[in-house]
Amino acid sequence: MAERTPAQADSARSVRRVMIGLASMALIVFLVVTTQFHRLPQGSSSLIHLLMALGILPLIMGAMIYFTPVLTRSRVPEWPVLLLPFVALLAGGLVTVCLVWWRYLLLAPALLGLLSCGLLLVWMWRRAHLALGTPHPGLYWYLFALLSLLSGLIAILGAVLWPEHWLALRRFHLHINVLGFVGLTALGTLRVLIPTVAGYADPDASRWLKKNLPLAATGAWLVAVCAAFSPMLSLVGLLLWFIPWLRFAATIVLARRSKIWGWHRAGTSLAVAMLGWGAVLATGGLHAVSAWPAHVTTQLLFLIFLLPLVTGAVSYLLPVWIWPARNTSAYAVASQRLAYGSGIRALVFLTAGILVASGFTGAIYLALAGIVVFALQVVWLLRV
Image 1 (cartoon, rainbow, N blue to C red):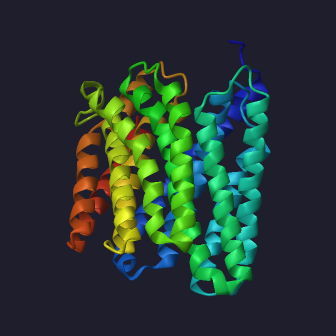
Image 2 (image 1 turned 30 degrees about the vertical axis):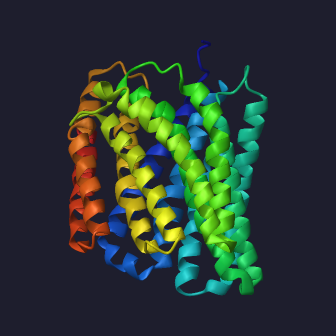
């Protein structure tokens, strides 16, 4: 591999700094949402948007920017591209404010979010076409995830312009963002990241990604469209989404359990998140037939999917972002410190999710303890 120029090395450092900043922002948002969790049962849209728009959206966009050069075997991103997650962060903050005070001004931040996501999609599409050889199939999971997000933003723009269709378009916006944007990004990443974190080769990953993207993407779109107009039919889409998830559980978590599961392995937290996604799909199906309250599905999404997903990914990637060469004792010590107790922390999040969904709302303090402990581990890492 050709040695990087000083300019390329500076760009790579900038990407890593952006990811550290976005991951820190996500953890702060998680702490805020957890301390205000009592508002979720009342369906606080502002709190949900705080979680998604300020914590998850910028972090996912940053992850796409970080992984796209790897998936396309291309150079590091240009500095204007690194600004896009922060533009989305600004848009998300404005959306949260508008939902509380000035809903009629939602048009402006929605357009800003549409612009940032559209530019990222164009950049990734160009990188795919300029790639050396065929891009890794994981890139197409990201592209379809961004298309889902863009359609969700267009739907909310339509809801602002035609308020008589607000409820239907809002349902589409919600489901396409969760199942399309978040779901496709997460599963597409985990299918590659779990073997990497667990330290084993997985020659079947590319084939799995190619085979299951049509099912997952079609399922997400069916759920979103049918949830807006015919909720019962959304079960068809959920069944389609379940197929990739079941294949993932069978071929990765069960077949490789000796390498993934452990009390002090970062891969355990990622595996719990993957299993948690199945619970989100199942409760989403129950909600579609009015057998499950929507706010409980939102709680499960946060507690047993997003929390173990983000903490597990950060526990592996943060030392890589700080010590990219990975050949120093500082990196080895930092990796051990963040991975320490990963399985216990994931079990705490899982327990909190089950208890909260069962009506024991006080169990949210279990999740809060897990986040606080992880934040202290990050501080511990920085003292290496």
